[in-house]
Image (cartoon, rainbow, N blue to C red; front, side, top):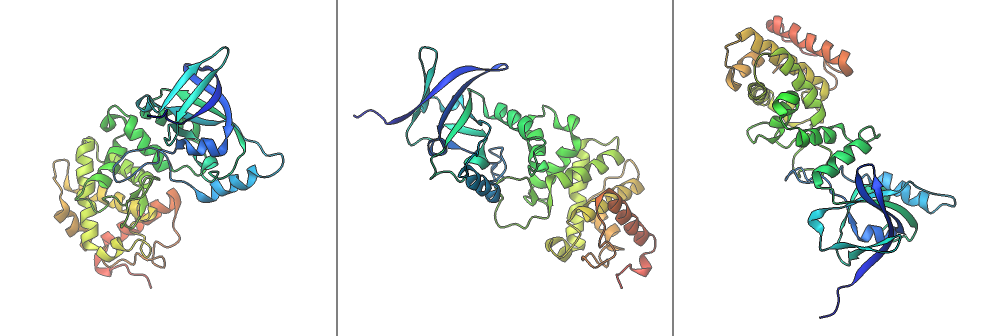
Length: 338
């Protein structure tokens, strides 16, 4: 049998604080061929990065072809579980990174958008490569590097938090509630909250995980001392009732504010009101929530021209909640726009 073909990159070995790294230079075409972006697959929950922003990537492609262009080093990782597809050969004052041809051994920790459209271009690029980070450790590094990056989905960072928390119910109960709504098949929000990764096909997106996390914080705060798990159950039952009482408004997010930020926040306040009215020991379910909502919410104009139109931000959400509370106090008048 013939020897397997490989690509050899000359490097210098060193450390970045407490971690071993390799530093080197290589063609963009080569780096693209041997690397991959571990984009979050929302259906399976694997991966951790945002989906490719083609416009951002194409902007960088145009830039690198201009005279005087440059960039900071691209950041990769050689995962332990990929050993066999890569090896490091020590030398005198330097080393060689040997990459098996036909394999994508370099995980793109911080360079997805720079490399995304450089498959057919030969420009020399600097790179730094961690050696042996696990996927979990990569996620931590990615979050630290990109935590304040413009355009990075806050919902994706929330997903990272969920993966890294040892006790989500204690550390971030509102995130546990939001993820329950997204992951529980009986929830009307099942797979409908945008995380920032590769989307689950076939379902309309309404709100982001970050929006639902903020809304869930309202319930966690107002429904103390109930456990995070009980708040998650109550939230699920409430939204089942919303989808039952207002099926058209809930199922058509482009035409309705029910599933947009202002609607989600305002309705969550109403959910907390309804639970509080039932007392500490009340065990609310979708049916009891539906009865309370049917008295006022079904006839409300939830479109972009209704009474909640133009409301946004924290102040807008509070005003929207007061509009709903006012409607509950005088259900006979049926608050309808116009």
